[in-house]
Length: 76
Image 1: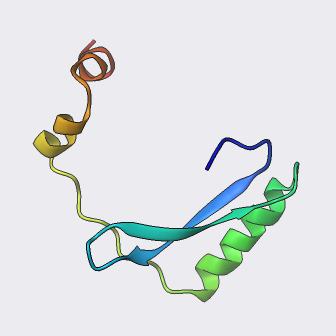
Image 2: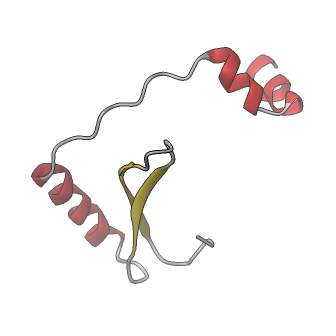
């Protein structure tokens, strides 16, 4: 979704059989962040918590990070 001057809230809902995640993104009116935050509190209260994903292995993570970013952010 393009950057909007409106608050957004994305709710992870699950995964497809191929492992890709899917979810629902809600867009609120401008300056209505508090309403989306209230909704998220009610959603978390009324629906069971999702499973916490397994930790990403360091080498696998670093394979996705460009070398220049890894050097500047993680090592300097």
